[in-house]
Length: 394
Image 1: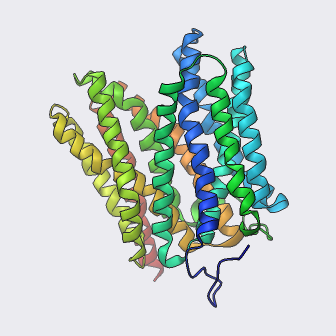
Image 2: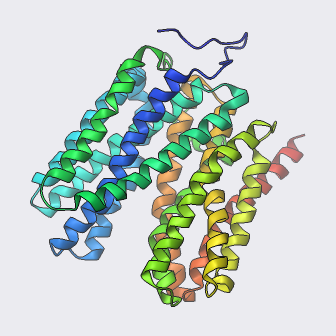
């Protein structure tokens, strides 16, 4: 299979679609299965009479698994190869998905959650590393915008599948596992084109968290706002006298904003020598959009417009942050930094719901908006500190 052509510096010159399609389609299949599985598991536990607190505790294993899997993924891929490690992770994830059906005792769901999300974390890290390595520097933003859009569509298709399949019987588990296993096909076809990890990273894993802080802080803010915002927005909406249907539609509008903005934002970032001002600008818009929520919550149409653009800004932090990471690093360093990137996202998904929930308890319903603004403001402060630090160095 032909390898992508590179320039004198070893950078890919043109988009090599077979390689990118393999990585993008593989992770999108996993996204569909996760979009199906997350509501499926929660509904089944609810039917079994498990307390909401315990359901939430079980769901939190996803973040714990991601934080533990991220540091070891690069080492495993270095030893066994990127494509082989991805295919092994797919088999583990599919087997875990089936085992949920047969796990009758609730305690068994904790190791299964850990195994399933550890495997999918490995898939995300290595897929994004593959995509970043295969993307031409001049079109990296476009490629990652396509990746983010396809992934968002995959996550949106999952709940649609759930609504069609329901939660009874083994069928939804079989469908989810089959979709995950389908991801092996494109990876196997393009296995000879997967990036090589011949060398181990030069630095300790946690060093990579601070090596490109503008990217890792961006994904932390994204994880906190997306996980906390999506999980607690229905509560905020209902307490603001909106109906369940209105809240659901607003979340859908936010999802459309996510899908609509990733490719345009990626193309804009490709025209920029430095992507950091774009990241900071999106965070500033995130602060402004968050602070306007208490004033617009009684105007459903204006709320929908704001959330459409706000959803694009939130997800743009992930896409452009990943592109910025790929522009700064390559090879084993990029793989390790990508793992640190996912680690920071996982930390955000744990911190976001906790921080936003506490803000609502302390400050009332408006605490939801203030906490969201606080996470965006944190990123703005990190960006400002980086500018000041560079100025002192020069």
